[in-house]
Picture 1 (cartoon, rainbow, N blue to C red):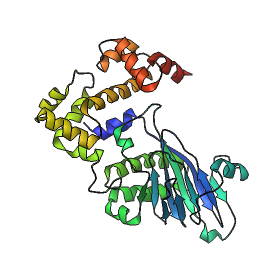
Picture 2 (cartoon, one colour):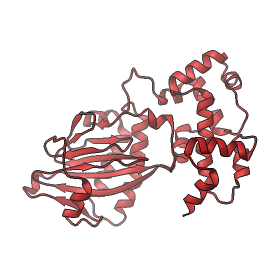
Picture 3 (cartoon, rainbow, N blue to C red):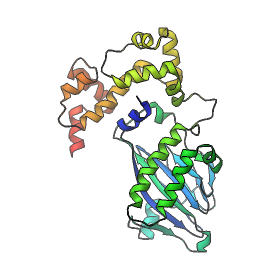
Picture 4 (cartoon, helix red, strand yellow):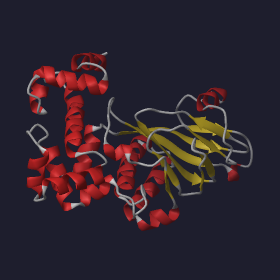
Length: 309
C-alpha cells in the first residue's frame, strides 16, 4: 500500500492555478493567509524576493520555486521589502479578471518577472502529522532540481505548458503541480538530512508496517500491543520509535486517522452515521459523534449538512 498516496487522497489534495505574472519596474504584493492550502511560486524569468512573517527572506532566480505548505501570508517583491499592498488591491487596481497574465507595473519587458503561481487545497478539517511537520517554506533551487530528476522534468514541463498558450494548458499545469508537490514531499528538500521526518517513518521497515496496517484497516481494534506484535517489536520500543518519527503516539495517530477517514465518508451521503462509526472502529454512533464533535466542533450530522449547503 502506498501510504503517502492514501494520505493525500484522504486529505483531498487538489491543485489550483491562480495566475501567471508579468511584473515590471518596482512592484510588490502581500499574499494573504489561506487556510487549508499550500501555495507555490515558480519563477520562469526575472527574479522575485519572498519575505515571510518570521523575518526570513529568500531570492528566487529563474527555475527556482518556493512552496509554502501552510498557506502563510508572505510578500512578493522586486527588492525584498517587508510590506506591500494586499494582493486583492493589486488585482483590483489592474482590473484582473482571473484569466490570462497578471500584468503589474511598467518598464523594460526584457526585465519582467514572470512566474507561475498556484496553490493546493485540502478537505475541510484535513489534518495529518505530515503537513504539520513541514517547514515555513521549501525553497527549491536549480541545484536541488539537478539532484531530483523527476522534479526537474516536471517543473520544466510546467513552464513549457504554461507558456505554450495551447488549449488545455491550465488543466495540464494544475495536474503537473500536484505531481510537483508530491515529488517535493518525497524528496529530501523539506527538512535537513539529520532531522527526524514523517517520510523517514514511511521508510522505516517496522513503523511503515504499522502504518500500512492502520491505513489498510483503520476499523480494527488495534492496540499498542497488537501493532507492536505486528511489527515484531517490543511494546515500549515500538511506541517510542513511532512517537519519535511521527510526532504523535500510535493510538493518537489511529484515532485522528479514523476521523480523517470519517470526513471522506461524510461526503458520501449513502453511508449512514452508524455505518461510518462501525467502519472506522467505534462501538456506537454516539461514541463516534462525541469524538467527532470534540475534534471538529460540530456533530457528524451538522458537518454533513454544511457540506451539502
